[in-house]
Length: 232
Image (tube, rainbow, N blue to C red):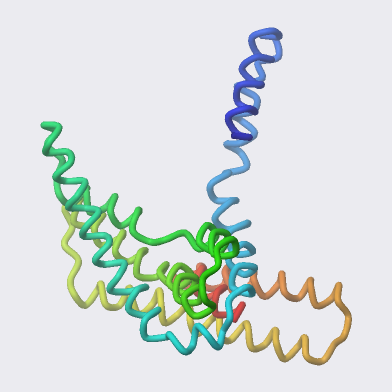
């Protein structure tokens, strides 16, 4: 709603004062700032980190198998169902859409959004264990979702990734994210145990969140999984 109102305001001001060329100027500003990259690499890590701190770790650990299956097999099944549903929906309208491209869209839609899930769970009266399962699935599904998207996109454009390459991508995304996140989180924990200064602890938390996310992305691992492990 804010974006819509702001856009209408820009259009209105531009119509009244055309000499300002306001629309073009704002497009140049947003283009120079690379807004999607800023949101993904500048804001997402802090939202995920904050969401992780809300999760009951003991409740999550007690349901670890369920969370693992939902974040892996669940995402695969959801991708297939979304892809097939989209494919048949296009068929009903008479549009010939390749199944491979429908699966690409399915891989985009399948993983749940951890920020939205965390907000919703905070408003409903579910048990802690059920909240932990739903929150944990949304926090850990990134690695599988990314690999599914890359695989579906490769098939859609005519490439044919091997089982070995897919397995390696999964291991790199998930395993690398877990190792990097656990390492940076443990270092941050040990450092904060030695101090009793809230502003410094807060700054160090921000450094752990952004550092683990950036390091994982730079090494080809999953930044979201790394920052989630660091938060835990």
